[in-house]
Structures are given as structure tokens and as C-alpha cells.
Length: 88
Image (cartoon, rainbow, N blue to C red; front, side, top):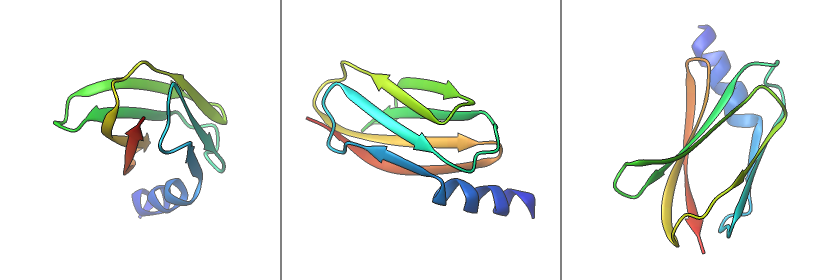
């Protein structure tokens, strides 16, 4: 199944740092084969608070989010990976 293959590639092809972060969050990608990659950040209650899209190798997100706990979702095609972020 191509969705499973994309999911496996996505899970092993990014790093997100620093975590905890302050004003800047960096996501580096490898093996994305020039596909569009989307980063969405949600508040602890599930409200979308940031979004960035790239076909490149990284996303550098400058943000003024309040300190606290956030969830991120990285999407590429039909695949998605979620994780936790902390804003200092």
C-alpha cells in the first residue's frame, strides 16, 4: 500500500527542534521526494494556531505562541505524524 510506504518515509524523514522551543521552531526533512509537506500546530484544546507548508528541506517557523503545551502534525500526501511540543 502506497499510503503505508509514505507513512514510513515520513516517520523516519524529519527532525523537529528545539523542543522545548522559544520563538523559533525548525523542522528538517529528508527523503520527501519534493512532495509538499505541511506542519500544523494545535493548542492543547485542538485549535489550529500555526501552519506552514514547504516543498523544500525545512520549515523555520517564527512564532509568538504563549508558553505551554502544543501538538504538531506533519502531513505529506495521505500520511501524517503527530507529536508534542512545549513552548517555553
